[in-house]
Amino acid sequence: MDVLSDVIAVTRTGRSRSAYVRWHAPWRQEFTSVPGSAGFQVVLEGSCWLLSPEEQPVQLGAGDVVFLPHGSGHTLADSPETPVTAPACGPDDHQLSGTYASDCVDRGGDDGPVTVVLCGAYQLDPSRTHPLLLTLPELIHLGPQAGRHPQLSSAVELLAAELENPRLGTDAAVPALLDALLLYILRIWFNGQSCLGNTTGWAAALNDPPVTAALHAIHRDPASPWTVAKLAAEAGLSRAPFARRFALLIGQPPLGYLTWWRMTTAARLLRTSDAPLRSIAAQVGYTSEFAFANAFKRRHGTAPGIYRRKS
Image (cartoon, rainbow, N blue to C red):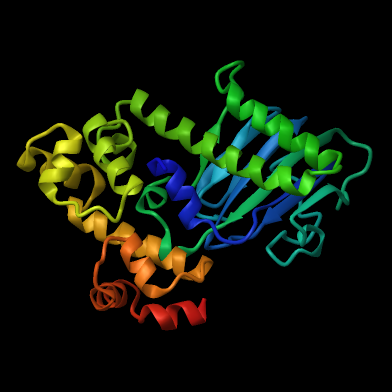
């Protein structure tokens, strides 16, 4: 798998949740802060205001996509001056307790202008959050520029159609479309950082061919006996310049990232499979189960067997 696909697969837990919500003005809906999640709001019809403690109010219209990668609390309202009209929406909201919800009850308003929003959240595991996600800002706002993001627009349209009118196969379609939505949002943002000339961090790393080649090699085959020299060869650079370049952009040396990724992959395998420890050790590059157990305990603070039983 490529780096971005791996990041999404490894850090996500449980099933994503989404809802197709229709409000009639006046209305104001608060969304609580949920650490260990990433939320999104997509305006499908009408307009509203996005209000958050750290940002100036932002007016949103049809086609606007807002992504909150760290689960920050925020509010949507027909007007910044509208008072609270409903209880805050959080993970225990019974109206969003299923995998998806359709046409949620209008919690306020009368016959005022209609706003339709596609909202949802992805569950993430804070203990294995990829550093790529940690570098994202609190809020990513993608405007509806015509024709600029056709894949994202298509994913939004398909997801909205499934949620507005559930039918045979919707339970299978919605999670896949939510994954596609997350992927397109992240791809667009990282590509945009490159266009803006961002030359540091993961935004630069994913647009740097040598470093990306080394990352793909690690993610493609974490069990391979990688050395700095072998990864430098994948990157097409000599050893020392590669090591400096990798550490500058990724924030840690090549073998440090390799070990982190191996242990993160091992944790996922322990949770999601019944494979014996020796098999998991081999899949992440350890010929000795003892050496694997020691490395895993250093990273996660507990032995692999205990970690599996508690997961």
